[in-house]
Image (cartoon, rainbow, N blue to C red; front, side):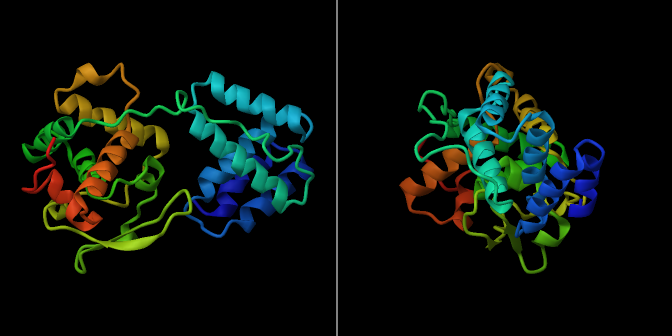
Length: 258
């Protein structure tokens, strides 16, 4: 969805002055890929806010917390709203050090044990997972992308002839092309990357993998794509492997030591 189409959904919901602020913010974003995420965060805030002040921001953050959003997600929303204020040269009502504090307990995101990821991979290899979940599982174990980054993959990002894939980063990390390991290439070849997924659908795909792997007992835990990401990152750090060979930890023959 381009910026004009994205903004159109807020044109009738917001007063003209607020819509113009949102419009200025949207067209100031450097990358179209995550425009939909950032604009929706700010648009939702503007719909619910009274005055554009600290009280309205605090109420919005409290609502996110009641909705069960994780502390890190709430902090990210806060930073997006701050950027919106800065772009529009609005007075930022917080002093240094007043940003929401993320407690370690709040930010607990369990990693998945390597043996559980191996069970998921076996389900993909055995054909118990459909094309889409098998493909995204392969990508998750190879590169450890975030959920948003999986959602934003497009057909043009995947070049199977050159064996490369481009993964952009939601949190301003290094964007680059990655080589596609031969172990996961068949899963990418079978997937239609023109099929787009929103965040909710991508979260559901994770649980499709869990159920398809016979791991339903994991449901009470706060798991998601981040759980695979944390495990992959930890294993790569410990082993000294680069992301290209990381896929071998699960789809190949290398041992994780787990």
